[in-house]
Length: 170
Length: 170
Image (cartoon, rainbow over all chains, first blue to last red):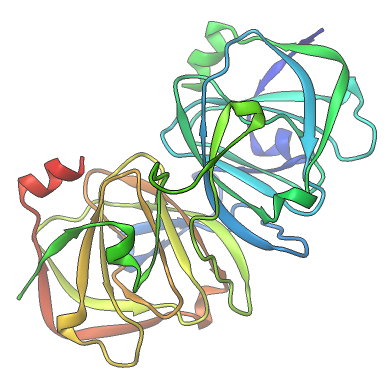
């Protein structure tokens, strides 16, 4: 079965967390004597009972089509990813809960000036960079060891992208 | 008086906070089945008695030479800046304390794959982007209103950059 890839936007992604982007349609305000515009408080960072840490993930690109065979979740905290070099990436998610419904799994294409913040417990695929080695700033909860469940899917789902989708995102 | 601009590195910046970068000389570990390398816990994010939030600052470029006439500090929490498009930026800092010693003010050039995290109370100049409109991911404490002191310098300090410094950083 194939996963349909949707463009990433705030409304579509709301069940899974936040889209992190400087969206001129949202409220922002001038700071620093007018030399900067602040797009304020863009994600619900949730440390749970831990503390928030900042890391960089350096991701190798995946080859498409890609078989999605597993998802993971972090029940004890949120996890945010922001690309540092404007790279496109794919986000595969499913709603929180003990059972993953295959029909509820969704895929989004982030256009490079967007990040995502997964709400606690949201199922998601590990980082899916597409073009070259890509760095992402990651804000999540320390310690990851007691905060990661992995779940194998009963049947793989296939991720494709066609050229028009990449062109629309870039 | 002119400020000497130093290259940004962990050791030189230690009195003021953290340099945020994927430094191969530092420890990192493979994750996600070997598809990503995690450079772990790169900054001391300190929410004080508040909570950490994530924002984007869209900065207009400054013209050099630039007169540094004031610094600010956030006594109640740390503040991290990470460039999202690889842009060079300048960082001007002074040690915490009620008095700013002009001789203790230092300037650093971040090379575009580096961010900084100011420790609570560290004096710093508002964001100094150099080339075009530049977006930065910012992690700091909500609410900023009770957490910002500004201090005018007795005499301006001048920031210059010569071509060799920019070339070495880029």
